[in-house]
Length: 483
Image 1 (cartoon, rainbow, N blue to C red):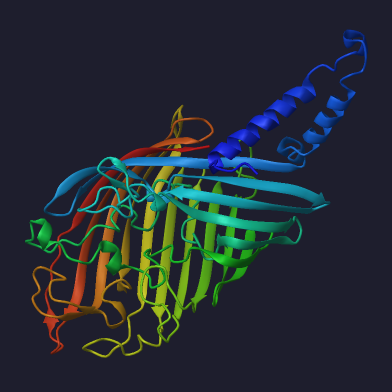
Image 2 (cartoon, rainbow, N blue to C red):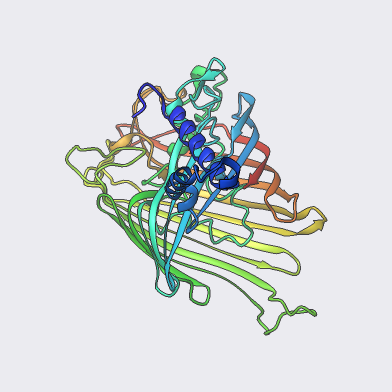
């Protein structure tokens, strides 16, 4: 064992030995006539033994792929009183890298793995008026390095082309991304139904023009489902076991169980067709492309990643449904997309838990409608123009804890203790995405979003308490590159 060396040093030494051995193994063999005898036979035998143990040799049967993307944007925001410009990592689809490996077993059987990590530095869903780098940098140098990378995937799988795939480890749940991965335009890297550019910003009460006037609540506290900080992508990647069917005429299904009492399933469909059989024009291509999905998850974990939970005598009890559908007319490029999400909270400590009204938490429901056109207007690649409207009703999963109690000072313009009983957040948006290479690996984009919000508050006498909020506007532009 080589002591006193770090992991990087040992990796470099190992790589050097491998390269050296590889060079020797490919060098011309010395001839007996050159040195007066076969003095190199023992050396050649030893080189062959070492070569047999190198990674290069083993990978002849294992296919390994390095992949990822970089997605950076410049964010211009206005909370009604303050304006600023941030350079951010676009969390609609964050910058990331990963490894995929697979090995063929026999016939239709194969096995493999996936490991992926994402960049968290200045993530657009976490920056706010007080922090332009999400706490990951300090004074121009690295600050909290432990938050710079997040493990997204770490699972193995066994696959059969006819029977499907079983995964185990840190893997996506069936309902994960059900509101975006059925989108036939594939614009989710630029923007999808969730609010990933202002989630971390604090609400601004009307009339409050200074830093101290900001609410202690963030936009994500009143526009989310009960299981996560999102309103549409309410599930995530979890440790567990999942089964994914092969595709049958465009349909695929999935089901899984996850730590430590969570299960769910989903059905997806993606296909293209021509309603009159055979398409149009000489190529006879299909004229319509469609995608749809629906999923359900039962969340009974004793802990939850963003709020509540913990080992305090109860289990979470959350039911969540979500789905989406999209259609695109290929000759014209016109498309339409719709998504919805419902989140119900039945936790034992939330039943009749309102601190003043004694009522249980309201059901969160959300929808997003989008229309646009996507076609090749210029030689560079597809151009996409789109716009839409979304609404999130009663997404108060992050406001006030189990009793939804808001202390004095939660809003600068409210000087009594209140209970939040509901909220409404609406958004309208316009966007443009331009592919700049034939393969579609590089995209430029620009998006504008406008938000309005209302909160419903009552005091100890059950009287309504007004707390008007400023709207929020943002514009971001940037680029994403897949590799």
